[in-house]
Each structure stands twice: as C-alpha cells, then as structure tokens.
Length: 454
Image (cartoon, rainbow, N blue to C red):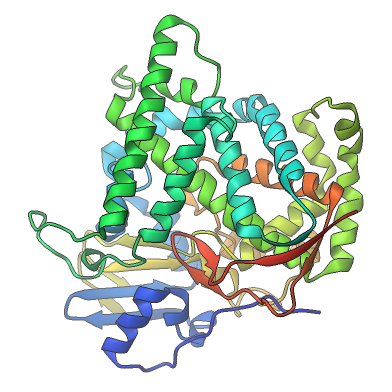
C-alpha cells in the first residue's frame, strides 16, 4: 500500500540563516521529524520567542479553556492584511466577537440545507468539466470550490464575468504572495511601511475592488427588495443583537475576502489531496464509487437530491476526514500570550508566539495508530473517537472553530461523490506530489492524476 507523501524534514540543528531561508520557501520542511512525537518545541531568537504545543492538554488550554488569554497573533495579520484587512480571520476581542455574532447565523444547519441545491449545481458543473487524460487536479478543484462559493454566496456561477475575474485575480495573488512577510517574523513599528511585491499589492487591490463591486450590487438589490436569499444577503442583513447595526460596506468587503480565501482555498486543498489518496488506493476508491452511485438517479433524471442524501456516504465522509487528518489545509494556528505563562516548566513572557500545529497533531505518534498511513477504516473504530477529540483539529476548536466547518464537509462529500460516480482517478507514478505550505497545504509542483470514465 502506498504511504502518503510527506515533506522532507530539516536536521535538528541548522544555522539560523539557513533556517530562515528554508522558512521563506516552505513552513513544513523547516520542521524536524522529532516534532511528530515531541510534547513541545521552543525557538528563542532575539526577535522571536515561539513554542509549538503538541500535547492535548496544552492545545485544549490555548484553544478551548482560555482562548481570550491566547488571541490570534498579530504576526499572522502581517502577511494577509493587504487582502483581509479586518476580517473575522485576523481580528480579536470585541471586534471578532461582534463579527462572529453577525456571521454565524448564515451557517446554521437550516441555512446549510437551503444552500445545498447551489452546491449540487456546482458539483454537477465540476463533473461535466472533467476530461480523460492527465490533469493537474489542484487547479481543477480550486475551480470547483470557487464555483461553490460564488453560487452559495452571491448566486452566481463561476462562468459569470465578475466571478471569473475574481477567481483569476485571486490565483494571480496566490502566485505573487510571499510565504513569509518580514514583519511576520521580525516585529516592526506600526508606522514603518511593510514591503510587499508589486504584483501582490496590485492583485490584492484589484480583488478588493471587484469584491466591493459585488457588495455594492447586492446592497442595491437588498434596497430594491430583489436580492436572492443567499449567504451574502443573509450576512448583509443580519443585525448585531447588541448594537442593532449591520456590516458596513468596508466590513463586508473584508468578510467576503475571507469567505473566498477560507471557503475556496481550503476546500480546494482538501479535495485535491483526497483524490490523490484515492488514486493511490484504487481498491478503496472502487468501494467509494459504489457508495456514490446513490446519486445516479439524480444525475440521470436531472432532479437535485435533498440534503439528506449525504447520510448515504459514510465511507466518503470517513475518507475525507482521513485526508484532513493527513493534509489539514491550514497547517498551523498561531496565537500569542498576553501575560506571562508557564508551559511544561518553561517560562513564557507576554507576546510569545504559541503555535498549534494541526499538521503535527494529525500525525502525532503518541496519539494515533500508524499516524502516517492512509487508513480511512480507522474512523469506524471506537478508539479513533478518542484520538479525534485530542488531535483532529482541521477546523480548529473552541470559540474560534471555523464557522463554515459544516458547510465545508457537506460540499466536499457531495463533490467527491459526484466525481466518483463518473470518473476513475489514478496516480501518475513519475509525479509524486511533495506537500508544502503556502496559504494552505499544497503540492510543490501540483497533483497530477490520470482520469478515465467509469
């Protein structure tokens, strides 16, 4: 059985200049292999004090038990502020709490059912775009996930001119963005200008301009009483229960930017890695293809399935969970201390970076059996439930758990089932993907698969 690919790991000790050079290229390969079993790791530099916590008790402390004492690191915002500004992904305190109060209602269970037909249309379109032969599946899944976002958020297919322009500009922004901004590593005064490549600045500005146009158009529809009942309308009309205010135009642009980044980029990463794992495990893929045939009557009749059909795909759901464990789209969560702390007898001063590595927790050798193997059957075992409580965190946990977690699970299971109905995926032996962290966990040279119709 093929073991899922992993990044190469650096030696335990390397020179600082070499470590920084590696870090700028890829976060994952700068980590030593011992972190898969270490309980905590510490880095002390003149400009940075950081600890990576790898035990369930410390992870719970940071994310669930005392989250206010460990807010999002300001360094995280440095690399994302051009695009995300003050979105819910980077804010803290009262600002973040207000944003969540106004966003969460759009993703409640009932709303998820209402968006399901749009997900189905996107899944159908994705299956129809595929062709036989060798393809780079990350780009294909990026297209599919973006289509879901546009259809559910603004009731627009990706073929719409503005939606297509947003998607293409976002792709250009990804390619131009540095993995590490200098200010994310070395604290700089707020008044000092931050350097970003020209292409990064231009694509971020263009993206925000395009999103602003979509927000303005929707605001006009809401005022005229002609707005569709989709996620954008729900979020733009939801009032803060405390103040009674709705999002301002600028705030809504910030939120749409993170919906697109989080809802599209992370799903694309997870779907691509899942299809690769299935391509390297053909027998298991065939089992899932049989399960997916529950969609066949809907494909043949053209009648969209009900949300409840997702219950008929337990193996596909377990497989997607296993993929998220091995390749969490967001590999690390970065918090910071606001007061002195003591972790495992080590003193941490205020401002220390606290890293929860979802990548390492999902492969923690002290928690999971065969942690580096692809074993979707494990999710049918009672022991896995305990492991998952401690170390399965692809959507984070605690108050800052991803508000779209249920949305992401639903769209991904549906897309996988729809694709497996018609298509067979096989690996291209000479092109083994090497995982690395950009905005999400992607493959260094893409993920190439061979497609055939079933």
